[in-house]
Image 1 (cartoon, rainbow, N blue to C red):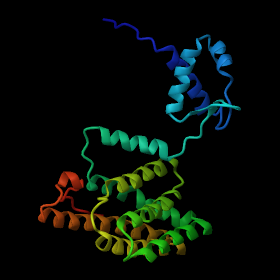
Image 2 (image 1 turned 60 degrees about the vertical axis):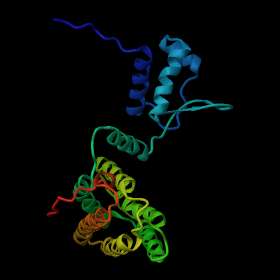
Image 3 (image 1 turned 135 degrees about the horizontal axis):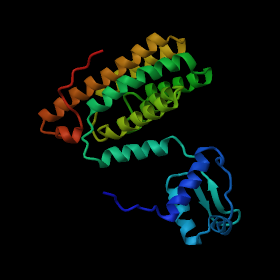
Image 4 (image 1 turned 90 degrees about the vertical axis):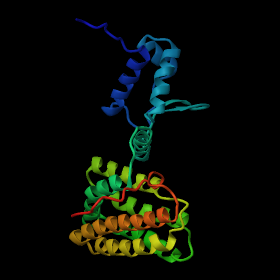
Length: 260
């Protein structure tokens, strides 16, 4: 009728206690924790048990363990990219076959909204940075490889995502941008087929954002994502017809119909 009570490891109890203090802002990024001896004495545990807890917190990015003069345990500042990468790694390690359809559908739900927010809230300085990224990509068209252009294209989307005021939506938008980059076909010679139309599409999105037109920015971003899907479908069909990579290697499904 009853099952044995499973008691958590002592180090896990300490880990959860310190984690709660950080989440509740009792401890803030940059704060130095008490010394190892003081913490061990305070919790009534051995130093080895305490080290296990601190090591677990370090793996999460919540604590930074420094050595040498001024060393010790400090509260870390977790950047957005760290949990985003962890989520991406989780998706890749599960028995899930992520396709461009999956990513594209999610992008259609988030990125047009991001463009709308950018048109409403992007500062003059941020607009200047977005314009610089686009100008740099435009200047490299026709001469640069996909490996050179891809970071600029991804940065363009990332800068727009950073304007989302809802932190949860901003987080998942960043996940999608990184997934797009990871699932790109890095070795395919697609510079002309891919980058030129995408660059023109980015120009329309940029123009709407700079003008502060949220409706036009939202539509331009929607059209940009649809265009990207159409290009990937075309490239997939061409490669497959030539006996190139398989659909699984391309991570593309050819049966999805885009509808607004």
